[in-house]
Image (cartoon, rainbow, N blue to C red; front, side):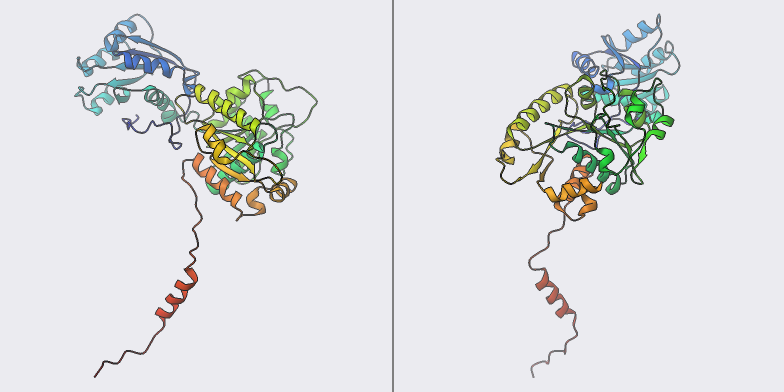
Length: 429
């Protein structure tokens, strides 16, 4: 059973809240108020309920009892109580027409006096005090499955470039490596640029199988298949590599990668998608269905326009999620006219998650050696930027280096003097 929800927990701005999508289920809601009816209807459009068949009707508990006297019950029933009827008595009547295995969510009224334990005894799986918003409904339905059956628990972070060649793959690979190493989370990088992917090069891996074998398989990929296709990069980081060959054209339908993502989510806490810079049905779907999106841009006009457009479209497609994030890469390139970070952020109406300075020697050394930035220079400021990005996306807070005080040498000397033994002062006679 799930606990009663905290009314502040649903803020989309909180990255630590992870609401896992539901499998293919049927949901029927019976509402008493117009506000709840609108919230449930809007929840049916949320990406996490994309596989659910959800219908919402008026009538509350009485309408539900009447409906199920002559028809089978769905996987989930959502009932709103307005407090005018004894809810325990109504639930007893509902139990008489409810099929075994059906899960029940009750949206209660502040006027309800029934103890929570009595609701649980009558088979209620979740109880939410109204009024509710869209995210309350999404969270309640999703929690029935993710909490009790551990279905699809992994967090997906999609990284994409606002333009080709802006370093989005480098950011994705370093971000995944940092999450695995510094946060000790088992992670998988999926290189979705099947023709020109560079993840194998960046991790110094040359796997013979990868994402192409999974997506082109005639059978639905299962956990055993995915385990065989993954290449081990570190103790906690695995790679689903792109073939990076041109012997075929990689055209896919919008849902081509869904089964791969869903299978990995069942076993992997963190999945980082390296999404190529293209706008197709499957790339848009991969971005919209991710838990977090990071757009990588350079400080020029084309990147400014593309980032603004992508933020606008993706935010509209994910109204109940945290807005997509963006970072500005290769800032300070010599002899290049750039849009200032402050002006870039003003146009986006939000601050970048990171501003990564241009350092050709550092990044080219890492790329040519098949290493991550932290492996080349563990104390470099860019290493700290990737750590901060990893922590923020995982909800761990920002990592800050302690500042060294200018007075530290002087304080050290004074401390040393105070620790020395000295002769006692003579009292004046």
